[in-house]
Length: 222
Image (cartoon, rainbow, N blue to C red):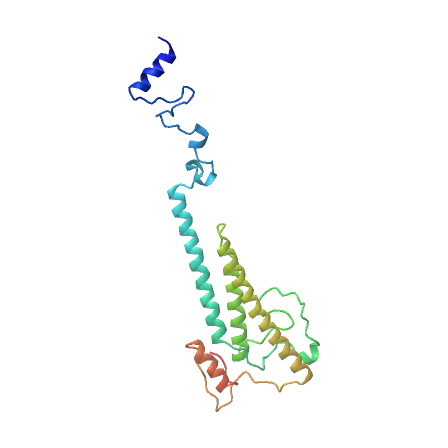
């Protein structure tokens, strides 16, 4: 029996066959090749390159400590700028009239040194020197904080240092203005000892201290 006879018999019994050249789809699922099954390699997903849990916890602790230290310095800076305003006249060690013009680029070896140093023992000069010391300590403390690679900490530290430097520049400008004013218009010599009617003030808190300086400008700091 040939192929033609088989086709004729199938048609008689009602069977419909597909063309001989038609390929049935396989019932086996076609799996992707090995290259498609694996995700693209990325160093951030490789377990071997991730920080160990212990190292990650330690780093997070260092970052939080650095942020806390910066915030503490920032708070101290804001408090210092709000609680102090330079008030003249300042009392210089050297006489501005005899010494000459103010030298802006003078190299200084420390706080309140050089030709523009202030006399110690006068309230306004003392407050000015203390503010200089405080700002200098704050800027050194901010610069000593390590960022541990954090850009946020680096930016916050830079911003804070810039603000403190601006306050120091403001103090230097005030000192220069006082110097030039006294050089052109000499102030009467201030006595370090208070007059008999003057009162002594004790430095118990910063706001009260500066208020005392305003009310009793000739009193002596003790």
